[in-house]
Length: 68
Image (cartoon, rainbow, N blue to C red; front, top):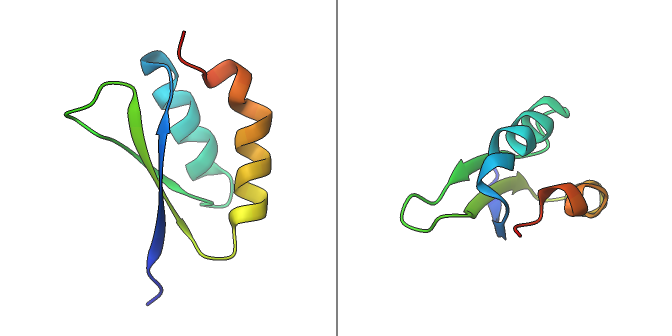
């Protein structure tokens, strides 16, 4: 089994479920979870080889996910 890569992101708290649904519904490109001790920080786990698609998607969504 391949190990998943981890990426820590800071997003607006109210955008968590939007990003989770997009990532997990987008051919399971990633798994999103909250970092319970740090508000606004989430952990994105994704398989190696999906970096290009993942970063393009995150770049497109950056404006609507940013923390004020």
